Length: 237
Image (cartoon, rainbow, N blue to C red; front, side, top):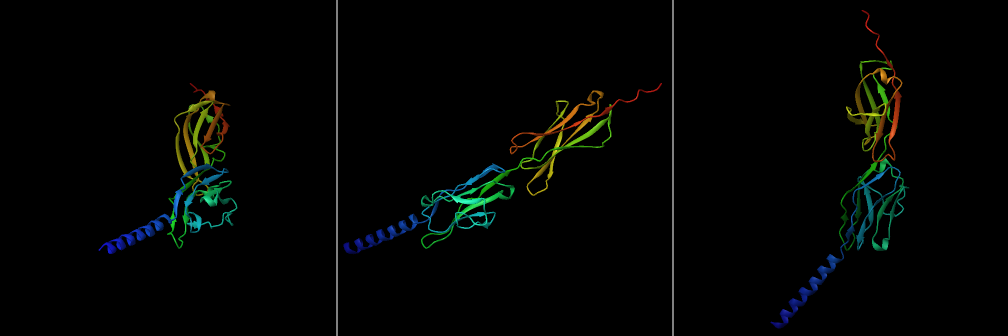
């Protein structure tokens, strides 16, 4: 009985060691990529560190495999950086553009000793400054004192959409209605800001200014127009 007990105990110990070695030999993520927000033209870094990597490590962009090489041929602005001996496979993107905006994953292929693993999805959010804003009027005709006119300022092709502020001779116009429309490319938005102005004789030769900004713009962009207002002829009695 003692012999069989010792044999069973010994076999169980060997089996447990084999199981532990199998678990410990599995590749796993030490660091998974996180969401990153950068301005266009900057450098983005998505981090990925793998423990006990035995399969092929590569990045996936929006479902497309980028390849296992650290220089990533075909993607001149992309490279895998970090110390490979430490399991570092960080994705570095130089001179980020709108085309780089999207979801990314770090994945490790299966090997003889380990199953394949895929990281959480990380989103690279690329911010784009607005193009130069411009003002639209209902008509090119001069305004008439006392009449109301709708003025529209448009700040095109921004991500996130631009915020617009309008000024009448330096004084902010607070009764402005804003909305967004699709821009010239996917993911870009045009901001439209409308305000109704009652023309005053004192507005003549004064400036109407539109100011647009978003987090990607290093400074606010402005455009101005000179108001032309005619006085109404006095009523003839």
